[in-house]
Image 1 (tube, one colour):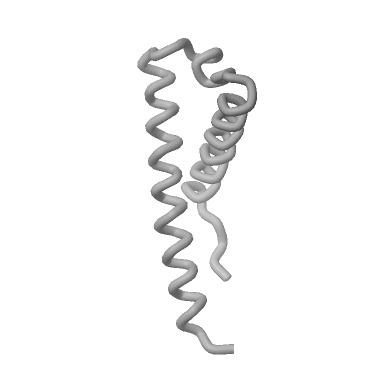
Image 2 (cartoon, rainbow, N blue to C red):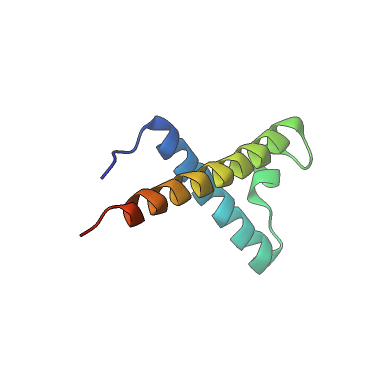
Length: 74
C-alpha cells in the first residue's frame, strides 16, 4: 500500500471542500466559497479551478491504484 504524499492530502482536502460546497449549493442554494471569497472574484475562481484539478488528480490516482491492485494476484 502506498503512503499519501503532500499532494494527495491537498487534493483530498480540496475534494472535501468542493463536495461540501456542492452539497450546500444543492440543498440550500448557498455557495460557501463565494460567500468567503466573493462572488466571481479571482480568488473564488482559483478555488474552483483547484477543486476541479483535485478531482482530475483523484480520478487519475484512483484509476492507477485500481489498475495496480487488479494486476496483483492474491
